[in-house]
Image (cartoon, rainbow, N blue to C red; front, side, top):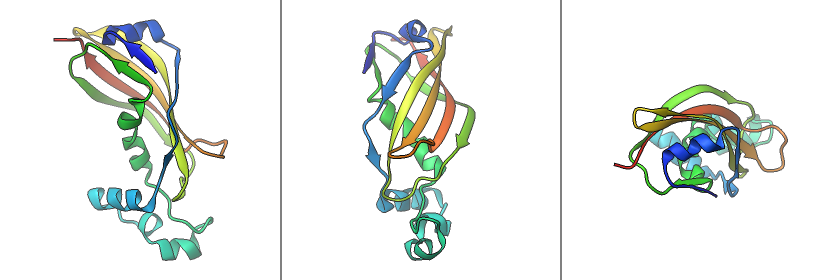
Length: 153
């Protein structure tokens, strides 16, 4: 884990890999909870019986946005900032869902610091986030996201 004293310390790590998190199982309960929360209850996510007969691997698949939403939780395993203010997800420059994640699969987050620059008393950090699927070469998704992190107040 990378431990930074302030958000500005990200500027010393541009181009650096932050490594990968532990593997997390994508269960049907988690998929169902996300479907309930968002209203995205398409059968490919929630209908296990239909998926058994119509999906290529016979299983439901996780929502791509569910995986993306795991990034803030999982990145806590990759870095910590000791003295900081508020942090905001400023957005994503690019998100690509490159492979389906079947129910029961394990995923992990791998991140890299693309850029970091001072911004209004804090720092703007661009991270490349890749969600890997255990046992597969192709990742589930790749995203370039931007965080705005204020300095300690």
